[in-house]
Image 1: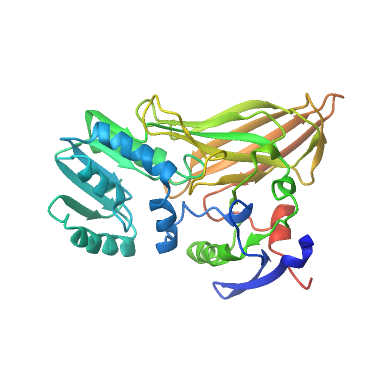
Image 2: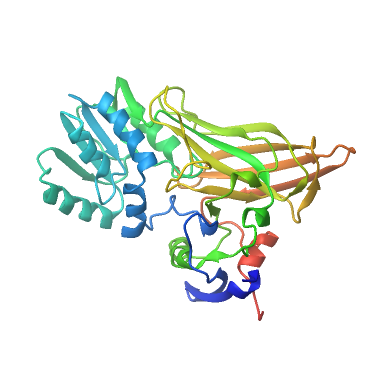
Length: 374
């Protein structure tokens, strides 16, 4: 099927404004690449999104192994427990002496309370509603488990939330699960990630796109989530651009500059980023690019049009993370210079706030959100 034959324009309503969205109407299938907005950092969770997390075995087996080692006989705090109170339940199963669970989304909190009764755990788990950075309780806990890691390690506010937990909720020798999270990056061309498919939002993602915009009050240039990104589409080596050491020095503001050497000829227009996660210090990390997980890669555009590259060219990339105006979720700034073998330099940049900011400022967003008639 020709790429263009699956393209349709859907219209969504955002705060009284009609917005046109470019959509691939072909249903998502298996390992096929799909484009979504990044969703984990917004309060738009529904049963489908919770199910994708609770059935993620690559994630779950690592968290369970950590809790089996760390939770027996301890007081455990589950931050962002969700409607399924998964890690609160798993902590009890692992032998925790007492469990506290915190959830900020009201609907998820009420469903969590009902589920605790359904599981018969209301006497073993204390459920609190509110932001973990504001709730108070005593005594302090021995272990904090929090699956608030984004497809970019810091995107869901883990740096701020868990730094606060270390200072206010954990005993001095307490530990956090997961142990460490890293965001990797490599140079790519967006169209090459989709091979013979069109670059357009998946039809099943449009309702979440609308929910994000309605939550924000207006459209903005959302982060682009690439599901099932092919590793062989990377044109450069990869490098870590942010690191969250939850049981060490946890930095809530970071800036990293790295040089990504191009390994084969092709075209690049941005970078693909993805998560690596350790729940215990010495385990093999979960690598989102190479393992099946509910997390996905995030693509950031850098250049207005794709640039030709050859082996040995270097993309010098600076990635900065700073906490945004809500005091929890980070904004990102990326800037890059492509140094070519023949001495040319091409510069590009992209700003990615958690919410607000520009709309249709880059060509990829003007493609995905067309105006007028096709």
